[in-house]
Image (cartoon, rainbow, N blue to C red; front, side):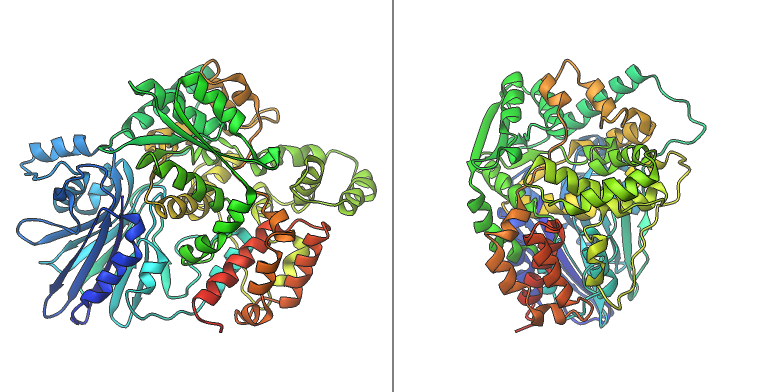
Length: 628
C-alpha cells in the first residue's frame, strides 16, 4: 500500500525535485516504510514521479518505487494490491517476461508494458497507478473497478499533476483554488461529491473502473474499462438455495485471495452481518487464530455492538481485541482528523473508523473489512423504505394528511432514542411524495432536508441520473447507482482516509468482481423481502453465523454526532462556522445555517449530517487560508 504523486510538464520545463519530495512528505502516512522519486527531462516534455511505500508483498528493497524497468523506458508508481498477481506472473513468464522481484508492483509494470490499458481488465484487486513510457512520452492513470483506492488530478498552465490525496496535490504546484459550485451543491445535498467532480473547479477525481491517457502535450478523456454485470429482464430467476451457495463460494474465494501478505493480517469485526461473514471465512482459511478488532463505547449502549462481535469471535475462536472508548475520545481526535482530510468530508463515522484503524495497526498491517455488502445486497434503511412507503400510501389520504403527518411534525426528533429516531426516519420518508423509485431514493439519501433548502442560493442544482443499463428491476438499478457513486465517494473514501492515516491497509472482499457479479445478477426480491434486508446473505450463512447476528437489524458504525453538536462540539461549531467563512462561499445563507443549528439544538429537527458537513467545510476553508 502506498501513496503516489506525479507531474508531467507538457512544455518541457524540468520538474522540481522539491515538489516531489514534498509530495512524499505529505503522503508519508500512506507509506512509512520507504519513499522515492524519479525525474526525466526531454526537450519537449518532462516528468517526475513520487511514491511512499507500505511494504506488504515482498517487503524487501526490491519493491522500491517508483519502479523503473532496467532499460529505463517504463516507470510505474502503484498504490494497492493485485490479488491475482501470481497467476498473471505465470502468464507473463510464459510470454517471455523476466522478473527480478516477488512483488505485485512488478507484475503490474510488466503487464502494462505488454498489454497497455488492456491489462487493467485482467487485474483483480484494488489500485491507483500511473504508468509512463518515457520513450514515447505518454502513459495513463488508472483506478480499480470499484474505487477502493483514491486518485485526484489537475491540469493547469501546461502541467498535469496527480496524487493519492488532495493534500499532496495541493503541494505539487499552482492551480486555481476556486470552489466548484456544482461540487459544493453535491456536497451539501448528498454529503459527497460524485466523481469526476471535486470541491475544486480545477481538480478532477478519476472515476472507478477508468483510465486516463496522457501524452503528446495533453490529457485525454477517461476511458471506462469495466462495467458491473446486471440482470436482463429475460434472465431466469435462479434457484434460491443455489444462489445462496454461489454467493457463499464467491465470498470464500474473495477472502482467500485477500489473505496474500508477507506481514501480519487481521479483520475488523463490528458484530454486523458483513464483517462477521468475512471473519467466518478468514477463520476457515487460517491455521492460526485470526486477529479481530472491535471498538465499543462506555456510554450509550445503542452505539455499542461489542457483545455481538464477541459472540462471533467466540464462535470462530479468533484472537479478539476489544477497545472501549469514551465519546470524549472521539471529540478529542476531531481536529486532527479534519486537518488530515485535505477536503470537506461529511461522514462523521470517519471518527470511529480512525479509532479502530489505529487500534488494529498496533497488531497488524493489513485488515479485512465488510464494506460493500450493504450496497450489493440491500442493507440500508433507504432500500427498505421503498416497500414501507408503498404500504404507507395505502392508508387513506385524509388520515395521513390530517392526523399522522401533523403528529410526526410536532414531535421531537433525534437519533438519541428509538422513538425519536423512528420519527426522524418517518419524516424522511415523507420527502418522497409520488416520485419514482430513483427520485425517492435520492430524496432519502440527501442530507439537505426540505426545511433546510434555503441554505443554498443562486447555485445550479445537481440532478444525479442512473447509468444506462438493461435492468428493469428498479431496486437493483438503485443498488447499482450506489455501488458506483455513494460507495466510492463516501464509504470507501472514508475507509481509505481513516486507515491510511494510521498506515493500515484495508481490503474489501465484498468488492471482489466475482462477488459483485454474484450479487448484481440476483433479482432484488432475493435481497429485500417482507421487510428484511440482505435476505440471500442471511440464507447463505444460516447455521454458520450466530443466530443473533443473522436476525439483528443493521446498526451503523456511528457516534452520536447530533448530540455532540448540541453539547460537546457547540463551541467548536460556533467558532468555525462563522458568518465570514460561510459568506466566503457566496452561495450559502448564513441566517439559514443559524436557523438550522437552532432547530437542531431544540430538537425541532435532526440536521446532524448537514451540520457536520458544514463544520468540515468551514474547517477546510479556514485551513486553506481563504479566510483569515
